[in-house]
Amino acid sequence: MPNTLTRKKPPFPVSPDLLGYLRRYKRERDLSVTYERLRIFQEVIPLTDEKGKPTLWDTVIYEPTEMSALNEALKQVYALLKVDGDLSVMGHLYVDRIDYCTFGNSTPFRIRIVNAYNDNQDYFYVKKADASRIYGLELEHLLSPNRLNFITHGTTLIEEHIVGLPGDMFIDDWLHRPELRPIRIAKELVKFNERCFVRLLGDMRSYNFVVLLTPDFDDWQVRIRAMDFDQQSYNGRKNFYLPQFFKENSELTLFCAKHLRPETAHQYQREEQTLLLQRAGLASERLSLLLHDMARDPISPPDKIHELRAGLAEHYGRDAYLRCESMGALIRENLESIRRHVGRPVVPELVPE
Image (tube, rainbow, N blue to C red; front, side, top):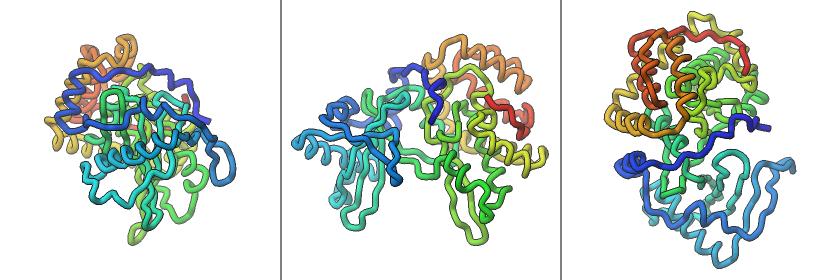
């Protein structure tokens, strides 16, 4: 069961600056479905997994007339998310189920969309909009190798489903399989660790990221993707942004220490830093606007910002951090630090939180 101690971050409203950014890049759209509308359900049925065990989700039931209207409205949302609103290619889709989860900050609804011709299914999520989560989604889109589709509408946030094996399931069922090369797994873990740290995405315990396994012509490719962005740039502890330090990831950390020499881990860390700078350069105008708005947005209290800036100043050996008064400024300074090739090399060590 996920630890709830780190999930007490308060939600932050979308500021006028952030709203202007979302409108500029067509993230803010007019929607007929809102989070508040989905909350008006009539019945709840606990949802179990394929083994009959309870999950964190409940299936919700609406009045028949509302369900019919919701079906069409949710299909329109899905069309906006996937094909910029082109409903002509959505006629054969239907809403199969709406699930609700009371765990976590976002208490999301999960919508299952099914293709009537071939029973293929997809999901998307309806959540309460939270500014720090939106910053996390947008930073993932700009600075990671993964593109993310999401839409906002006032206090409502729509997110696409992120495909992959949950990290805890990967550890239990896949980590030690002989068909996967340990070096490829360890390399991706180092790169994921570095991405989270530079862009200040926290709480990446094993149940908050997914692992994608892709068969290649001579082997399997591995990629790790964050799937929870609630803890973007809020906590003041430096190690909160390094996945290697969480006890839930201890088996992965030991795995890296076993299969990578420190020199090789440093090489992979530097490779990811180079890619981060390239992505930042390609999206320089958009990233600059985002960090500008983020720097003006009080998404973390001053004491946490000051604690984190002191930790980062020590880590990178740069007093410039001590002048930062916002989380946006700290991310900008992180990018400047890796541009200058400063900081301590990553070492796959086991120091759980």
